[in-house]
Length: 196
Image (cartoon, rainbow, N blue to C red; front, side):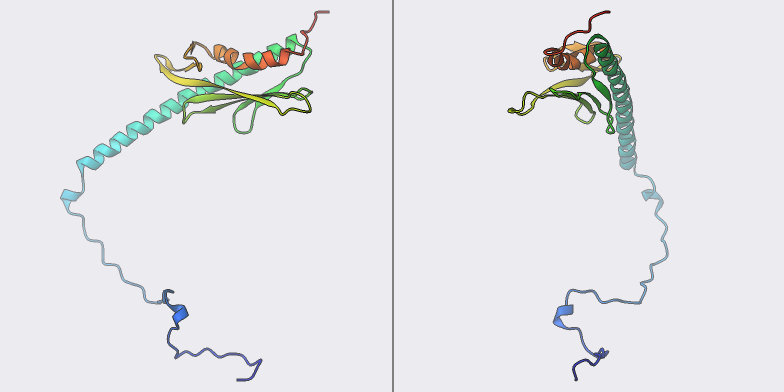
């Protein structure tokens, strides 16, 4: 064979060792047997039906829980926004707040020292988590702290409990509990607005 000539495949060759493990292609279709009828005694299995009913009930309870928790979270976010608006009205300090793309609530003071609060729902773990971040000075990193509210079942659906076990009766109480540490941090160096 001369250099540069095309190599003709050898159609009569056997599989080499490097082909071992590669499935051979087959153009044959394996014909499936025609469907045989299922015997009547296998049409219905009471154990399977009970399991299916149980799983449907579990799914329905989960959907009801999620719906109630999300309604609580919606009302809590509204209370958080109202509390921040009340703060902005009374102080010479502008705090931007709103809903994040992930559905959390965030409030930020962009001027120095930077301050941020991020409140998010974790319905799988049954908590509302709040992270506070405060800028200190150029030589030290930000200070962060966390506060958790537990979601609990109540007669009316679901409610919230603080880290120390105190029940919060309303979403406004929850907003107060979550934002008080943030507002305390903000007001350390911000004077109240004086009436003109």
